[in-house]
Image (cartoon, rainbow, N blue to C red; front, top):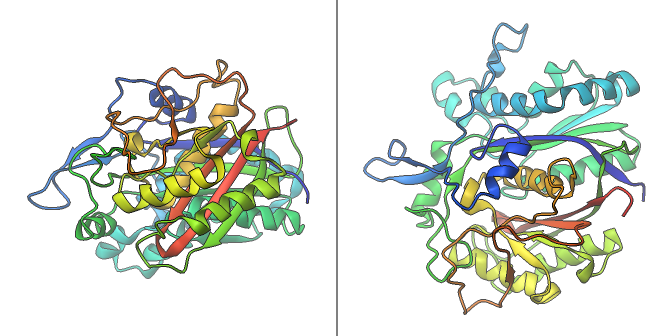
Length: 387
């Protein structure tokens, strides 16, 4: 199996307008970047992970004005962080050899309510926008597998590269805050009215966020490459909205990622948990992770800081995992802290939750988990280029 490398990456969310700013703020014990909102659910106030950065407009660009959706503006902000690398790849390989794969769940459904333009509600809209913006002629597609969309985009990109359909793929995920999922999670009674507390005995649900992560994937490495070592995917077929409490297929996805990476459990130095803060998700994930790692590997969920960015969550969190391995951003080998009230739910298997200012002597392989509605499970392992 040919090796795949992340040769450039960018991100945006409520924690910052670049991956370095997001990473810095994620390490700050006093950081609170959730915004209380009472405009979506009338009479109710919920903390949301809103992007505060001014996003670029998609106007006065020939044939692209109709793509001026918040989702695409988030995506364009991420592209601006890696565009020089993307343009170099286009020059190197040609416009028909660059693929686009973008995960999303919301696309432009809020804008569609006003415009009635069916294109605004299409899952493939962000991928189509990016392909047209970069004037490419090759493969492009949208991916929508609920909260695993970000890692599923990597899986699709991996196949495109390994089967010589593309020489480079711009892959990632994006979602903007939208009324539909906020109302949906509120109706499921899992939307928290306070900052979420993943794995706490006091947890009572999720916060919704928005964001994006974008990555340039190639088969050839550069000086600062991060290697995609393994991806594992399974499906529960258990329930449309509730995960299997035993986490059987979730742990199988972890094992598949380890197998593809040719790694053992103790080779993993840190795990970014899906960690939504709901009763059922944290129970499932604690069982799945403990089944493979026991409590030997440090873990944390960053959703208590970013909110759950839905289809974009795994993109933002994979970007944070890239930052862990990036010596320019993380020269002291910090690992991402688990922000909660410190009252771990003793009804769950005991995981090794990280603390603020915690560092690792060895930080070579990191894992990111994503688990979504419909029993979709996806896990990615990243490592240093030479590891």
